[in-house]
Length: 464
Image (cartoon, rainbow, N blue to C red):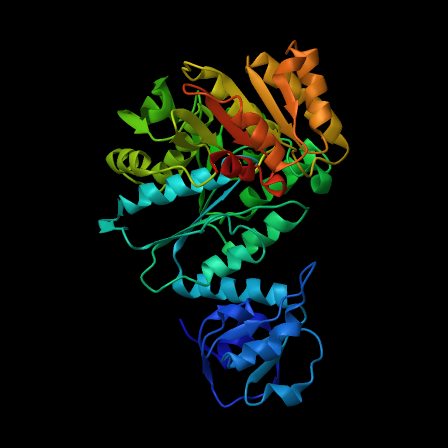
């Protein structure tokens, strides 16, 4: 989609400081390295880098329009159009909102403390198999790539909307108050789901009630004539849903969308019977862990609320695959590996450990864990509890990395794990080396930690 000067000004309320030769511009970019001829370059100011420093580079690469919020030496900008706005981050979101209104797809938004990305992927997989009002949606569904779920990632996702797109499935993330509200303003969702409310990002959101207030902003911003999916097994989500006056689709043990029976297939996933209203069907899910049944129910509830047939819901769920480093299964020399290293908080750690504990295993169950970040004053307590949880889950060996490793060990010892089964590594290489001398065929290994711990490096070095 191209942009005219008038559209840019209408979307952002900006002011033209300098008119360039071109009146029509190309795609919007925030990375000067991705600028193409005719691009609109938005100079964002981040915590470490200020995009205003790269304006000249963007112009050299072919940008025809640059958007700024502070003074620059315009003599170097040659024949480009220069637009000044109050805040370039706000302007990026405003441009995305303008695109969303112009293309007018149905927007489905997903947030929550756990399961956002998996649920988003499942929703998109279902819609790719679906028809709505007799129109097939395959090839007409935009989704958030990876976890582009913040105030930069969400706008960049919506700016990829094409005229033929009928649905956009977007993920909303947060670590401080007000972000979900702003993201919801940009996306203007027709449907929304809050997967869960748990202890995550406490450093910025302070408490569980603070997390609930922040996540609840999604339900407050879903269009009044829209629909929300409600996880009735989460008490916080149930409370938040009472504020919404539009249509609701419930899911969970007593929801409209629920599971009637299920069984683990080991490394092959999970099999369950899905019921939606008066219909039911068997589903084979290519994911480990009962928590992913809940994610599947959330995705199914969103699709059901759109009027998608149960046959399409089944096909989509069965075609969905784990996202990289999210309960990703692989076999390495006869050792089964669960790579869940993308991120971690207390609830997701508990779910991953329970999955490891429940799986049939011929050898040892081994957990390789890194610190959980952004827990603020709760950090020490939550890591102590994590160790206790490891012990209760019956994990055979525990390998730890990070500043909170001693707290986790203390909790595990308190829970009854023998001291000799707990190893604290000095770094990734040291932990990988210690694992290498112990791991054998038939073992199951779980790798998990917060993103900043890059615990997947231990796995990579173990394989080397």
